[in-house]
Length: 98
Image 1 (tube, helix red, strand yellow):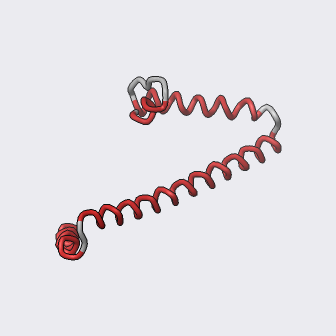
Image 2 (cartoon, one colour):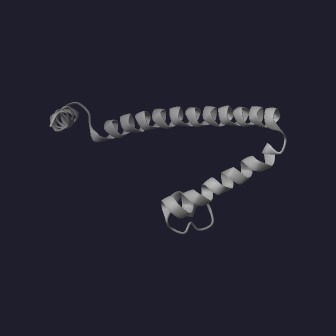
Image 3 (cartoon, helix red, strand yellow):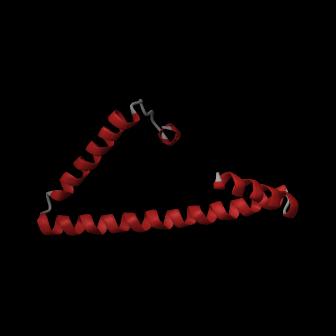
């Protein structure tokens, strides 16, 4: 209930103070900022996991360089067959759609 009241107040304020073009520009800036932060987080997470796996592989043995891709492929197979439950076609658009 509080969310609906806040939403109505916000829409009323927006109608009186800013026009549609300004609102779209503000939304674009906010979404761009959020996507930029998400990209930095994903980049840092990939670097962290890469260094973590390299440390594990160097400590345990070089055969882990063979085991890690097998684990990754197995996880993708399980995800596609048991979570998505649909056939994923070839190419980036079909993967993004799935």
